Length: 212
Ligand code: URA
Ligand code: SF4
Image 1 (cartoon, rainbow, N blue to C red):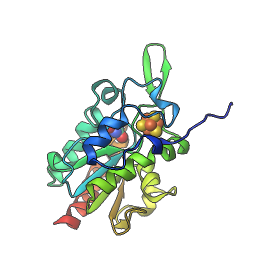
Image 2: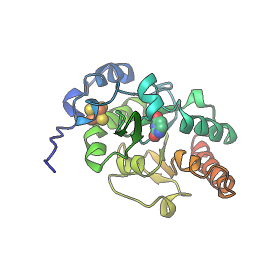
Image 3: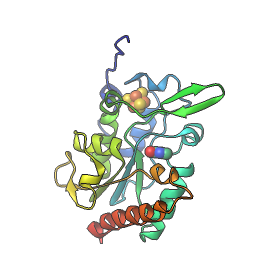
Image 4: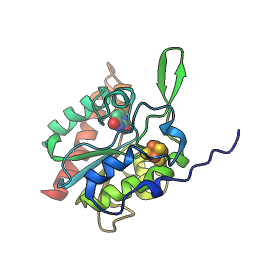
């Protein structure tokens, strides 16, 4: 396979202006090749004054079309879980580790493809800038991709969930790692789903306790 050149997002990230400036600038990002096939960049949702930041993997099909994070099936499940955890979705800052949808075309369908470590690294300047602008008290990594972006290393979710860790940057930011809500979608109709849902809610509650 030919080597793909990924300069990374740093030359597109403005150094001032807060989340609004970041959102505006992200549109032009060419830090990796994912912008090419995606419909648009999907930046964040929620107030910059939020004390809780949730980080997903990458926009899905719906998000790519609408331009907003977590509005598809995984997003609905996340809303349910936040609700059950007593956290108002409108008060959290929601974003993704990778800002463009990576997919494979199969006929007319676009099949989600996990971002590679190279995409996570290329896109991380955006996430770091968001962390710097929002300065949340606690960040929740939804799944392994977000955990990798926030910890700079690969972790097994089963081994790290249930504890409050520390994000790599800014130092001192509490970090809770949990599963991605889409992992529950795959369990639909199975008895394990209820247990998995309760575990996700418990992880979100742990994040809520940090800011209580
Ligand atoms: N999955 C994610 O990780 N992020 C979204 O925005 C939607 C689905
Ligand atoms: Fe830039 Fe991230 Fe999109 Fe790659 S995925 S082009 S780094 S915004």
